[in-house]
Amino acid sequence: MPQGTLSTATRSHLEAAPTLTSNHVLFFVTGLVGRVFCGYFCFQTLWTDLYVLIERLVQGERPARIRLDKQPWNGEKVFKKSATHALWLLTAFWTGITFTFYWAEAPQLLVDFFTGRAPFPAYATTLFLTATTYVMAGLAREQVCTYMCPYARFQSVMFDRDTLVVAYDEARGEGAQGRQKIRTGFKTREERQQQGVGDCIDCGYCVQVCPTGIDIRNGLQYQCISCALCIDACDTIMDNLGWPRGLIKYTSEREQQGGTTRRFNAKNIGYGVTLVVATLALVWSVVHQVKLDASVSQIRNPLFVVLSDGRVQNSYEIKLNNKTSQLMVFELELSGLPGAELDLGRLEMIEVPPERSLRIMARVRLDEEGEHQAARGFEFVIRPLQGPSDLGTVRQSATFHIPGRGQ
Image (spheres, helix red, strand yellow):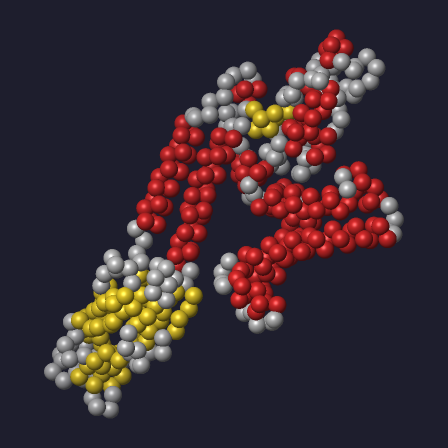
């Protein structure tokens, strides 16, 4: 009997797009503008931002959260902490279950999931993603970027003097005498410059907003994810003081040293060319992918069977994979094996639903009388009766084995 299983061939082929080109994009973008992927696109960063937003909405801004952590356990603290973690778990569960829905008929799986009829992989996948999302975005947070993410460790090979990074203008911020808080005699830029003091008022906001907890004033560090939160915080302070922005900004090492950043140097051009080639190869493979995958494998245990009427029977498993959104109907024939009988059981026509696969057990019987070869080559001819107009006949080679002389 044929066995139909959900096929993900077309979907997997398209999902290979990010896998095929992600490394090329990562190297090209990092060479140009640094670690912006981490700051703006990474799942860990996005989910952490969402969890921080939930925490802020429930518990308040950072000073309020610090006070809440320090105060003894009471009704307010229990409620706010419980509400925060409940919303985190709900968000994590929603992340897990929506990912699981992607792989099946979502409305039906939703009903099956909450009535206990969903397959085990659905529950296992949802539970795993719920747990990992909750732990990574809610509890671990910056520890993931600092200790677990491999990108932080090998990003240096993609950086050069022209790479855009988040940097502190030390000459402007420190002056000759270093930083100084706002106080009498150090309130205006003129007064500070006369005292040899820089524009940094040592407010510490750049450190407070950093998701990985570094001080950008100590120079570029591998923990920096280029999220620019320190830039926003510093610019806000400069605006409030009426001083120019840019004490912390996106720049390059060459620009910091008084030169001009060269965005498209030989290395970045090489990354770009590789990215274009990989993208074109991907597009070509998608456009030219076959509409039907077919394969034939012989059942080798046993390799052949001698029937009571003297005929020899070989068995084969035929796999058909419909990569289109149309129903395909086929008829199966034999070529190159005169006198052979093809047995497909109760199948008269082979129907393969859209984006699904089908396995067929085919038995081929042949009278060995007069045969002198222990193995004969032939073909299964898969002839389309319904489907895409440009779907042609598919031929799959196979071998028919008979008992050798003396066996």
